[in-house]
Image (cartoon, rainbow, N blue to C red; front, side):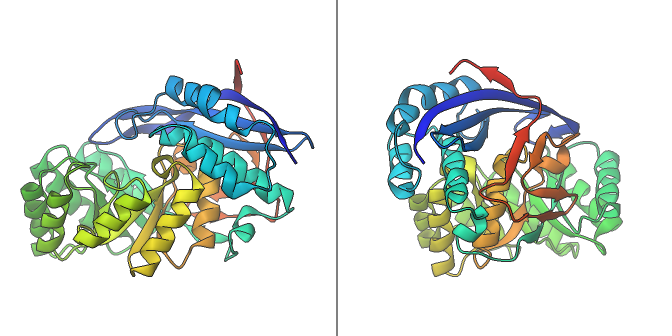
Length: 365
């Protein structure tokens, strides 16, 4: 099975409600889809969103990175040579992690198809059913409480609450949601780099003193402020999770060395795909550090790859935040992973199991 060509398309899926964080507001999934074709007729699918404020990637940069730097290295190569292929992807250029992720996901999809097995089995196996949390976007307190109650009523038992706008209001938001649903759901806060280290300690201690037991607080300080992250981690009892502070394996090693966080959030768009995500999970497991698997605003194409990874690396990946498909008005993918509110399950189909994707808008190759 050899790679013959790589094609691109745009995929647009409206969200049920706007996705709001301390950094941005988005009303639809709008991603680049990558299709890697082979001489046997098999097609591997990958996907990447434009997340300029986090990874620095735009739709244009994703497409050009693949078209001019990554694709030329892969045309004609055997799918079976996976390790060499992923090294070629990772060394094609600096950064551009979302572009690398889209291609790697397609390569791993084809690798599973080559051996006629679901990707998670190729990666080591596991229980093909996991449970995800759901995101509660930043909004008025009443709206966030209503959204939280609705999510719990739909079966979600973990809520990721977006904060990081105004610290006083953030505390009140959290208290109100806790009063409404705490006996029915675990609460996770995501500050999206919205606080200073001292603000984070103040907010988390205020919530702890109020008797609110959070499962974790995600990325309270700026991504490059590892000292600030350590400052917070050392001064609160609530577990602190690093997200934007950790892209690749080297950063994970440094974060663990510094004891700057308790949990690591793995996202394929940050790691550049599955190869580095696997390394991160293994490094964390070796040091007894838990991981969460997360996603950007992605459809069930790339989120499916994260699901397969979570199943195969369940010893390290103990928390799941893969709600992108649940936030969308519909699932454009036929086949693939099944997303049913909080429950996610993998069928016994080769690779990612994707048969077709509705609504693709072809782009020039």
